Image (cartoon, rainbow, N blue to C red; front, side):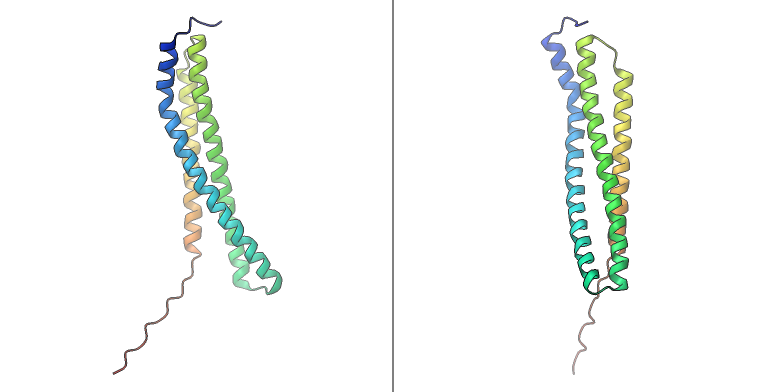
Length: 150
């Protein structure tokens, strides 16, 4: 069962876990950004719904549809980031289990890490899609400069 676990073995596993922990930190920052964007989207959606209840316009309805799609993209990105975080935690746990039981965990760790990277890439694609939708729906009205008087 348990091997003769030494402090040097644990120290080595901790060293191996540093890269996944940095990756986990990066995913946490990404999650924070995604959650903040979702909060802004929800606030804008609620404002649009309130406006539509009092004076419905075609423009507000169209914007609400875009807001809905943006929220779905961010939701997908959050889900993928959280799943990525869980897999990174499983990578670290697997490294420790492998050290405690003297198991070769190279294949499970590699598979978990690759899957975590794929989920993170998916999260970034969802985030990018939401950014595209947000910028596509922008409608700025730039006033004409006043004509020069002579």
